[in-house]
Amino acid sequence: MPKGNGIIIGIDAGTSVLKAVAFDLTGKQIASASARNRYRTGEDGSVTQSLSQTWADCVSALRGLGEKVENLASRTAAIAVTGQGDGTWLVGPGNAPVDDAWLWLDARAASTVTRLSALEGNRARFEATGTGLNTCQQGAQLAHMDRFMPELLDRAETALHCKDWLYLNLTGVRATDPSEASFTFGNFRNRQYDAVVIDALGLARRRSLLPEIVDGTEISHPLTETAAKAAGLPAGTPVCLGYVDMVMTALGAGVRTGGQNAACSTIGSTGVHMRAKAVPDVQLNDEGTGYVIALPIPGIVTQVQTNMGATINIDWILKIAADLMSASGSEISYSDLIPRIDAWFAEARPTNLIYHPYISEAGERGPFVNAHARAGFTGLSTRHGFADMLRAVVEGLGMATRDCYAAMGDMPSELRITGGAARSRALRGSLSAAVKAPVRISDREEAGAAGVAMMAAVAIGAYSDMDSCIADWVTPLLGEAEAPDQENVERYDRLFDAYKDVRQAIAPAWDKLAQH
Image 1 (cartoon, rainbow, N blue to C red):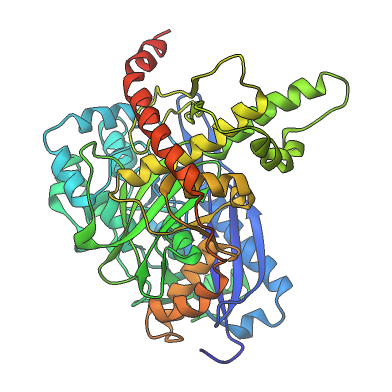
Image 2: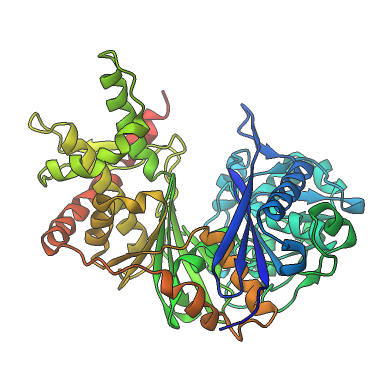
């Protein structure tokens, strides 16, 4: 175990909040500071963010951390940065922004995704990247820009991601990491760019926009004088470019422990379901969906499926209840009802009521992609009340989780879960029964910042490799395993067959409804 009072700063530039978190060298979280992220949405489907404001917010968070941690500047051993994935952050001469960034939420490339997905080369692109094409990705966004706004790319010198932009401001180096490089433009087997993929996207003539690939566990760059002055930290401090935030969060939450690969689900507004695997064990599905994202461990990747909506389904039904209850005179917010979820769930006896949790107006993206998919109850009758419907919604999240893991192969032997919803006993029990495996919660705060700080801990030699770092930073924070209820396992087996039958059969109706 490392000794000394050194600090590693993990920066996690999320979609809603940018955080700077201080850890000691053994993984103990000391303090955090944050800045609210700001982005703009347009009626044309655009979702954009100012590059210069994002850097200013990063500086603000680092300065805020300095106010909370005594002698932060003299104690900082390294800085590491991760951030929201996908999206397109273009820089030109003098490292100046070309325009506002297109975020992963931007939908303007939808027609380009449809066109590229129908081309003969798309399957070869999927076989290399392990990643389904969608509007979130830089590859689709660059292809769309190249066709409809070529002047943007003509003015650009490099296409970066969010964390890459912050790394550029911290170090003066234009680079990206192996995870985003390989799932967007490369091959997950060798973590390099792949000409087959670039050609399939129609971007061969824009190849020069792709930056150098840097693995932050092996290579760091010094904090520049300019960035050091802005942030209040010493120039020359090693800066580590992390992998994308999705896998940094999974790393910090226990997707791998004791040298063993595991599964990790983050149940937030969206649902992110990941399995760490050795490269030869990756099973690509016929539908061409999901992601394969490298971990900062040689030969180990995560296979990922993501639900467009997870807890927003629970928010929806609680908002309906709150509105009805408020009609009687006393104002009630749906958040006031969250503590009652487990009691309502327990009140409802198990039935054959099924709920498909596609409440997002963007439809679903994992394990199938259909922008027209919508939520619905199946099996509803007069004997079902509110508690039954709430229980079906919670169980629907379990079904959606199983649907995602089934698309990646066998069910996991254990599931680690993160996100605020993990505090619900009802949800934990549903996830456990659905995947037929024990669940375990990590007590790790700020898992994304911790994951990227772990990369820096390895980079500066505080640990010899990632698995030894995990032993100190992650394993002690994993809670006790909660085994699934066997009766529920058998019931979920039966319900899942019906759940999948319904979602496959109803798809033509979704398309018809979308026309009106």
